[in-house]
Amino acid sequence: MAIKTKEEYIESLHKIGRNAFILGERVEDIVNHPINRPAVNAMAESYLLASENKANGVGRAVSYLTGEPVNRYNALSRSTDDLVLRGEMERAMGVRTAAGCPRSTGHDAINAVYSVAYEVDEKYGTEYLKRFQAWLEEVEKNDFSVSGAMTDVKGDRSRRPSAQDDPDMYLRVVKETPEGIVVRGAKAHQTGAVNCHEHLIMPTRGMTENDKAYAICFAISIDTPGLYHIYGRQPSDTRKLEPNASIDLGLPRFGGCETLMVFDDLFVPWERVFLNGEVEFTWPLVNRFAIGHRSSYGMAGAGVGDVMIGAAVAMAEANGVGKNKIIWDKIADLIIMSKMLYGLGLAAMVKGRPTPSGIYLADYVLGGVAKYNATHLPFSMSRLGQDICGGLVATMPGEADLRNEEIGKFIEKYLKGVSHIPTEHRMRMIRLVECMSMGSMSADLMTMGLHGAGSPYPQKMMVLADLQETIPQLVELAMYHAGILDEINAP
Ligand SMILES: Cc1cc2nc3c(=O)[nH]c(=O)nc-3n(C[C@H](O)[C@H](O)[C@H](O)COP(=O)(O)OP(=O)(O)OC[C@H]3O[C@@H](n4cnc5c(N)ncnc54)[C@H](O)[C@@H]3O)c2cc1C
Image 1 (cartoon, helix red, strand yellow):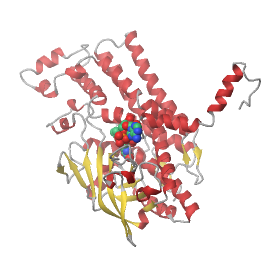
Image 2 (tube, helix red, strand yellow):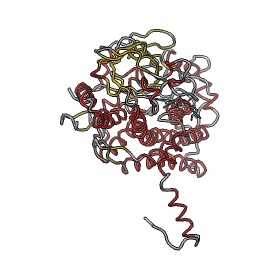
Image 3 (cartoon, helix red, strand yellow):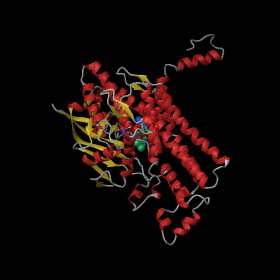
Image 4 (cartoon, helix red, strand yellow):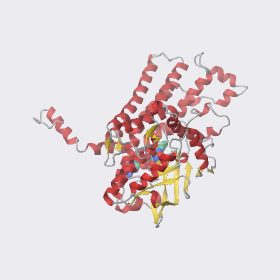
């Protein structure tokens, strides 16, 4: 079974145990917990995309390992076409869920680890790639969803891992045995991880010789003893616990989730270890994971942005200003922002380049620029969405008021915009914008845009570092055009 259906994915979640906690309580049925179910649905959509060949078939690929059809989220990228199709898949997921896809970290981790394992083996004669391929074949064959876990909790940000007061602030090896390694630490903000089958764990930064115990990469199954998932709170999350909630959820079908993942002296067998102490390869690993993720943020952001554009147009219509030029000026801004994210993400993928292993990576500078724009454009888009909605986005009475026998008639009457659009539809659209701009999905649309795959400053560092060699040429160029130099080595 190389490609699971949505139903098979959900069934498989029931079969696998995990230590999961939501709001301080152990959760046995993660699939049907009302806070998590929308996030399960979003993950399931990636299975639907592949199994039903939706969105022009972008969700499936042919495995470079086995020649079998596989979910593209588990596939290696070996051409710019592969990168572009992956980007289009992210966009399709953004459009279909308004929540993006939690499997994207897995895809980026798979490609980054493969390319780095190849190079470590070349240098040290290790067997990391063989181990990794064996693991990946199992992942592809079972259509497991994989989370890419990179971000450590990091403690004191001014100190390196080995210089922390508490050595567990970065995930580390605490013991080696003939059978494997024992690891301790925690990974923060893990998107969709609690709804995955496997986790691919990577270091969070470039390590030095002193940080050797932190230079590790490995895979674990979600039911590994000693692994805990502690669910992150989102704005308005407890609305999902309200009986019969629908309108007030804003996005009733889909959602996102992050967990704090704790590794409490967890054992990893050697066949699942893909880096152990080769410190000089940690920075390439971090960088390659990040670049895949940065460029895909543009594409996913554009997909979710399309939902915001649709909501803005629907709201304008419901408010009776659907043909107003001032409103359309704002909608044009929304479209331009969404297209900017799409275009930059796409450009980074089209300009991708191969690594020695044959894995293609998106262009570092363009990917960094795409991600830098994703750190602020979703905020501007949310502002425009709220602007067009009007103040009700923050003050509207709830679904229970609409259903109340005594006051429901007032809500029905006074929350109406134009006559031909039902009050409930107007309320739903307002709640959607609320959810995306300051409710539970603002974590995905805005904060994930801001910090996911690196906060704004690292994007600038990436752009500056990559252009270091070019900048003196640009100065010469300016001197030539200013008449200071007579000739230049123009490219
Ligand atoms: C919604 C969401 C989903 C995410 N999903 C995932 C995921 O699935 N997998 C994963 O691995 N990670 C994930 N991340 C993590 C993301 O990559 C991190 O949030 C990001 O790298 C920033 O790290 P931090 O949150 O620890 O913030 P910090 O590192 O504390 O950064 C906060 C601010 O301090 C600045 N700063 C930090 N250190 C220094 C320093 N030494 N000097 C000067 N300034 C500094 C930063 O630039 C930033 O402005 C997710 C994050 C979010 C918000």
